[in-house]
Image 1 (cartoon, rainbow, N blue to C red):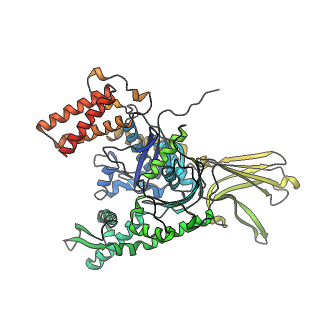
Image 2 (image 1 turned 45 degrees about the horizontal axis):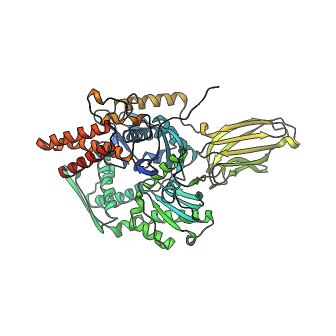
Image 3 (image 1 turned 120 degrees about the vertical axis):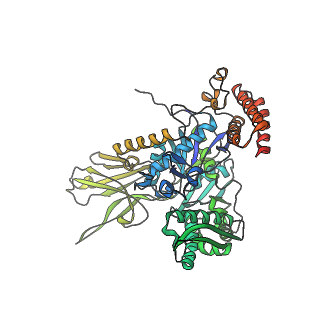
Amino acid sequence: MTETTEPRGPIVGIDLGTTNSVVAIVVDGQPRVLDEAGETLLPSIVGINPQGQLVTGVAARNQLAAFPDRTVASIKRRMGSMEPVPLGDQSFTPPEISAMILRKLRDRAGRALGRPVSRAVITVPAFFDESQRQATREAAALAGVTAGRIINEPTAATLVYHANSHDRKHIAVYDFGGGTFDVSIVRLEAGVIEVLSSHGDVRLGGDDLDAKLLDHVADAFQTEHGVDLRASAQAKYRLLQSCEQAKRRLSTEETVQIAEEFIAEKDGQPLHLTATITRQEFENLIEPFIERTIQSVDTALRDAGLTTHQIDDLVLVGGSTRIPLVEERLRDEFQREPSRAVDPDLAVALGAAVQAAMIDGRAVGSVLVDVTGHTLGIEACVSMSFLGPEMAFSPIIHRNSPLPARYEQAYSTMHDDQEEVIIHVLQGERPEVHRNRSVGKFRLQLDPGGGARSKIVVRFDLTLDGTLKVTATQPATGLSRELIIDNALSQFQADARGAAEERLEDLFDASEELIDDEDPPSLKEWRADDSESNADSPAETGPPPSPMFQEAAALLTKAQAARSTVSGQDAQDLELLCNNLKQALADDDPAAVAAVGAELEDFLFYVR
């Protein structure tokens, strides 16, 4: 027998967002976001730069307007599809694009912790279906990350808000992000977080609000100049970026101006864009979207059997919750002030980190009981007519069932001499077969004969990580077949997966911003370059470095960026402080790290 072991190393929490992504970990019992050069949010954008190299995050966002054909944003909205996405002179599937973002997050965590990272808890919208969840797992695998668990975003946020509470509470988590909307109703009691219901819309988020404002401005520009800015990819992306910035500013300002010079031309003459948008004007445009979220809230409350008056806390998650109209409608709906104690952009990742620590055996918060976001069942005959059998969706595991879930249902063959049955597994909420999603199909050979032999039992087992095992059995004979839906949903054939891995590996190897797997990160990166300081870092074999050492590494990253802005004596002082801090790290001297780090931080503050 071969002994198998779990992957070693730290396990992190990842919020793989539509607009921004975040990675976090629990250190000394507290969840904290892992940043890079002071940046906590990684824009969920990838691109190919003019040198043909992969760029992610801010660098990719900066080239979006100039090179839209070499840049991809909001890929999360395409997860579950295998439709090719053009990126420069190549094309990639949505899981491959997401893998590029995950690889960057993995490397960010590795640099911050000084250790290779290969395990993560990854969050997804509560309303993601099984194919979208499987696509997320595949993206993680392509990035070199083992997805220890896939959990719902609102559920993760609950973990960070009420991790140590033992009081009985009902909590509504309203998660309005860049590309998706979710709401979960959660019961917290005796240290157990139980999700009672979830509802949402995977096609509703801040991106839709940006697009609505863009159309409003573009329509006005077309009326005035006879030119449609949406017809030019570059003009459209420039306008989209301006609209997104205007949306953010309108959360704190009453009026903003959108201005873009030389955005188009007509009859050889340049055209400039200037538009003034008031908060009231913007709110009138987006009100239908906000009302859609309120409808989801009402549905989730009904599913949980609760009213707004029974909700003890209203938690806001996601950047779009900063919009004043959102808070106003929620105050009206719940008659209470929403909670925003944790940065709404970071709450999901922090909660995922808490769950990751729990998987690793560390007691840091409440026990999580999650639910399934969709009903699962099979296609079954409900009646016979002269036209033939009438087929319908027969639910087996209902939406909002606690995970893990197991349930079985008995069926009968359509006639006594039937030699096989087809088990067609579906996911959805509609009685009509064609209005639900097909997620798998298999055949069970039967021993015909009627009577007890006509009975077929179908059992569904849904695990915490979303893997569904469907078993069909003929009890009278013991004949049985099963299907693991996790494998059936794999969107890569073996040869296609191999090709995807090769394409990505070539990009990863050529990228200057990613870590080479053959040269794993460690605190040696911050040690002095002389041979006397090449001893193995204790961080490579022991627990993750303390926050003090992580902050020192971040300071050195900032110092490296500041080198080009200083000269003369300042440059010499900066070099000396950096060398002293590297030596303190090499000596594993916390007191020296703290003292020199404080000096370097003061120096960087004054030379900015």
